[in-house]
Length: 336
Image (cartoon, rainbow, N blue to C red; front, side, top):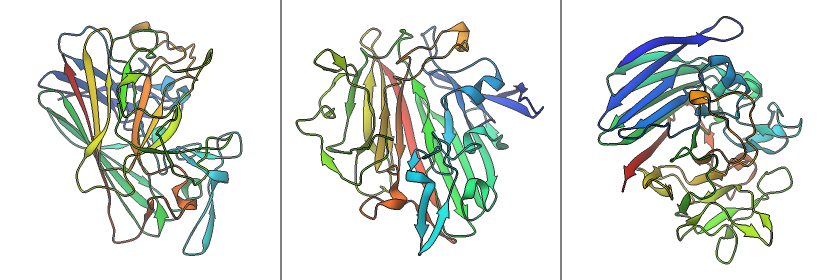
């Protein structure tokens, strides 16, 4: 394990980087946002995720590599109720929707470095009662560990002092061959249903079969799909199951059409957000000076369903005192 001062935020707060190495993987993790900044697979000369060279750039990015929370993804109007008590959290997306924890969610906070070994790091964060409008003081931890030969195992936990909602989401953008876009990557999602959304990308509450739809990724196919001459934009939650599992199960496989690199995602979570990166268009240079334009990376995010607090038919995101939120997700790389 190596740790170094990565940089400073505009307010002078220091951000550190921890580098893990084992088997065929080298992984860089920042204390800012518990961000996975870089992933390298032996024998390849390019990163497998999108990232930046400077700490302040992450405050302007679309959550590159971060562990987002307290509630990842969207809550309609930023409103929900627990046990009949109504709460209003920050509507930070167009003033209408709560997204990824609010204006200063977990992705924009500097986490404490708790423990490290040559192949793992544990970070911790305390979110005070009332932060962004959420009830209860939440204490969260995340451990990233490399399991040889080439798996990143993430375990996230949280406890609370009052009933609240928690949905921690790992938000890396993957590009397995360093192409300008990922539209020719081939994708398989192990889900037979999805949650349709309204114009604000908030679930309607329905759970629909993917059969016969443009959301059917049960068989391997390219990320790119056309409806006539128009390319379909993907930013949807897929239903892997209706409840959390005690151990990780298959969520998705992503493969480069160029170099044979494959990513397999498994998780205990019931949902998977697939976002194809269509709205990426950054002037900020990325890793090694790369330019990140439309579809430069794809997100495969294990999660509780978006807006779950407002839909009783969705898996519950409520966490109560005495309980422990626990997510285990794995990201395994192979070269065939």
